[in-house]
Each structure stands twice: as structure tokens, then as C-alpha cells.
Image (cartoon, rainbow, N blue to C red; front, side, top):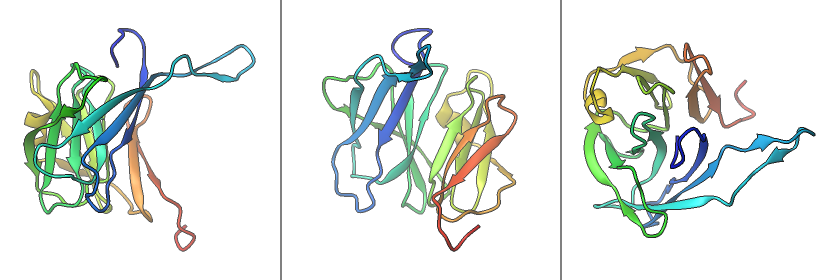
Length: 184
């Protein structure tokens, strides 16, 4: 979801910061590309850029979640013994930097990916060695859901496995590794 109802969007998060050097991070948002009658991808607009800042540090984060129920964005830090959860409430500015709000912590290290189901009811988070699952209760915010104990799901660790998403039918999930020739 995005600013125009019934228009799907892609969000491209430039939020990784291995050395905690950059005070601003960027999310680029474009309407979902479509194909023309020749099968060629068509991008209708230039990306909009949402600039974010953390209120207390320049964190490395590899996980951005979008709540499809209210369009709030969530960012989960990577390199902390207890990962921090930050929130950017919708609507967000594309004109000036948006400061994130800290809304919680998680007892995990190296959160590298996550996804919220398209109906907003299920959440996945991934470390290098585990996948965690939460079922959202009625009227619950994402931060309230994440404050509860998760269920650990089956996962075979991958070389630099840093991506995951729900399957299109929402009944499973995919993970993806950054290829390393030493690993199958």
C-alpha cells in the first residue's frame, strides 16, 4: 500500500549501515511497475524518497516492515544484543527528513529480514540462524504483537541468508541467500 488507494507500491530501503556512519537513511517508493502489451516493464513515475533519521544513534538496519493496515513503517536494528524497533507513522514526508520513534526491543541479535503478510495478521522476522513468527491479535499494533513470545519456525541456515518473504498465498515463506560458492 501507499499514498494512492488501490495502487500497489514497491519500497526500496537503503537503510543498511555496517559502520553506523550515516545520519540519514532513505526509502524509495514507486508505484508497482506493470508490463506493456509487448511484455516490457513500464515504470510510470520517478521514485519518491522518504528520508529517515533515528532519534538516538545511526543504526545499521536490514529490516523494514510495512503495516498494510495503516501504512506505518517499522525498522528493526541489526547489530544490538537486543534489537530496537522504530516506527514511522503514516503519512510520512517526502519533503523533509522524518524522525523515527522507538517503540520497543526484541531479545534477538542480527535481525536481517522480515515481512508482514498482505492481510497484516502475521509477521516473520529472520536472523542468520532462525525464523520467528507472530500472529497478530485483533486491534493490536505491530509493536504490541512483537512484544509477545514468538514461535520459532523451521529454517535451514544459508550462507549470508538475509532475505525472506511470504509466499503469494500466505501459507509459507521463502528465504534467500547471498550466494557463496562454498555453500550449496
